[in-house]
Image (cartoon, one colour):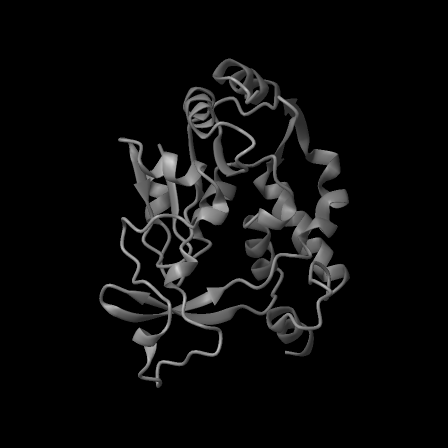
Length: 248
């Protein structure tokens, strides 16, 4: 049976969220409505990815091409649903009467009580909400998820000097350049042991919840990459983004 509102709220209290600002990644193993209500009661505000890869043009796209309309790509708008791969939670949050959403055509966030942080994101600065959360001692919350979904690790990669990418997205006003685009995340579970000393854990209804202080997370990622330039990259030889980092 999915965890109740009171069980989740109690778990968040045990995790020391105590009215902190939170970036949430959640699986559908937890009821999205109960999760939203408990976060509203236990935090000062929270955001979650509402990413829209449907608006992303292919990796090899260049604006000199005139065939953008021929791909299975949809223009981003504020009402574009978050990709189903992110589960039900982002859409429950986005539909909330108090929710806001940032305007990045691929990497937008939605949240409640976080308008200033959401508005900090621009197409040139997709990690701005994460930087703002770090400044305010925010927390990353993984609900039934592992580090492969932890988008903040990408910001740590950027801070460590790792190559970023340029991608192109379709918007209602045409094709838009999206610089500082992240790489692949399949290798991110390597950081789990480094995060263990400061990760707080709880279990509710058989679902593990991890609370990771943002600043500690970013420091761990930067240190990991400075120790090993290839750390956190996946091992797939067909991964163009990780291979680009290795050989770039």
